[in-house]
Structures are given as structure tokens and as C-alpha cells.
Length: 19
Image (cartoon, rainbow, N blue to C red; front, side):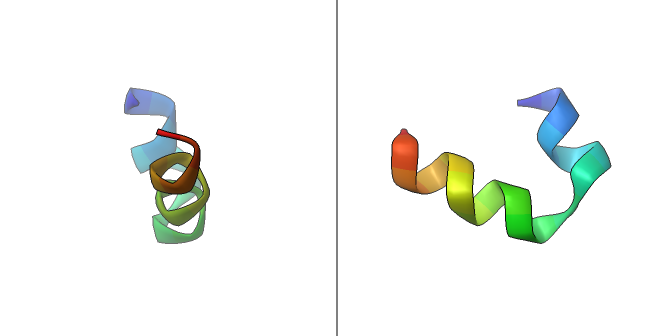
């Protein structure tokens, strides 16, 4: 999930959906 912080909030939303 660390790489998500580097990408941005948009990635966090996509990862959250998968999680």
C-alpha cells in the first residue's frame, strides 16, 4: 500500500475497491 501513497489518491480509490 506504500506505492499507493506515491501514486496519489486516485490509486488509493482503485486499490480500496479491490481490497
